[in-house]
Length: 565
Image 1: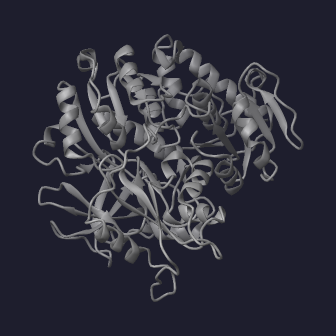
Image 2 (image 1 turned 90 degrees about the horizontal axis):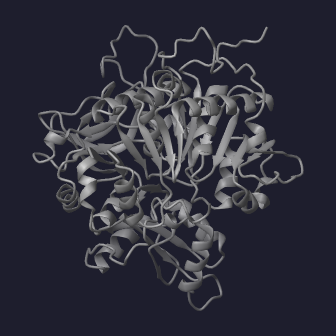
Image 3 (image 1 turned 180 degrees about the vertical axis):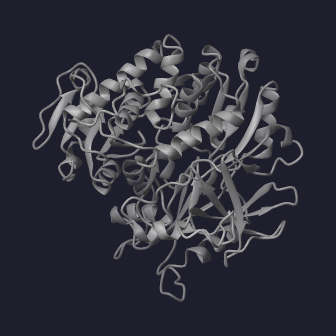
């Protein structure tokens, strides 16, 4: 007989027993089935209806005979189908891969190939753009298409309309426990292509409970999902809300003003965003009604400038500020309690509930107070490594030394922690302060961007001879991407305008270089024969008198998901 213990509606399952991701929806549906779970425009979906839709997706995946842990990619803007596809994949025992709606077809194709996606959920217009790359995805077998039109026929693939997909009869799901794979979130690495961070049910559920605990989320809250759901912090708006029985407003916005309008219209009580969006929001007049219901605002994705924090507190004086630090590899690591903001506004706080944050020297010993060291995260939120990349996994996910973090010498099995690569210090009272990164990653508009990923696209245009990318301080973006490049062999000069046009065609908006500076080649090398990125970045800053990049940024480039819907 088939194992039915993983079925969403299994009669012996305690609905309050939330160990798996889909349990969060089921438990809230059991408590208050009529309460609104999702709002998208003028559409509202109650918890009871969402729970039924999640189960229907799980049955649809079972009908297509997807095996346990096979990957389900979701390439949609924020909408009910996006949420149901992810949670339904979890309920079915498969692994969901949420794709940033800003990604271009070539980048989507890379992810589909990298993790061997078996089924893709997308919209008709996005599918049309993806057609040229899908033939290069050998593991892909099924496409589910939203909308009312019949799904198009595609060679070698079954294509199903969403309405038909969720109409499949009930079937048994695969048995799943909380340490099983749940999701793969793609984030830029220090070199080359994005890497997939593998998370378990335990990672996400423990994270939801921890964050909802210190934010005080409850069934009366309304959270605005402004960040992409492909971000760990963006997806967290769903998990914390569903754990608490709160409502989530899904917003795909064009301009920052749309965010303020949604906050006023929907009486939002909790907003989590990245510094570039907050900087844009503080440049606008806020309706008085926002302060009447906004209970907190939370920061992620980089340091909040103090002037921006002060401006937010002026516009919403009743709201509590939560300054947070996190890693996709371990979800969320620290937060600064609101009552500490005035005393230590530059701190990233202390460990979130059910996590321990260590500051270690290179030899694995603990640092003294105020001694710089590497931030190391241990606990239930530590992810499962990078998909298909043992080398990168070994760099970041490492065993804790004996005697550190409660690891006694008599414990024979190792405990794996995340070694962040970030340098921090801890003061005598236990509060942490960010100092810098050990690698060359750029943090722009809330995104981590690999310089070599930018360089690969530049080389692919065949419009440069040599190039190097690096981040420079920017008042709105955190860092702006600066490029130094030489002309192609045989060319008299670098055509910067044409190169930027190609960048806009091939890159998502947040990855497009802020500036491209021509230089006569060859570019300088380091002793290993590689282009000396650090030297070129230092020279650039010196030549520009150490000033921040100051050209205006594209509006809402960090989180605008409406460019292609």
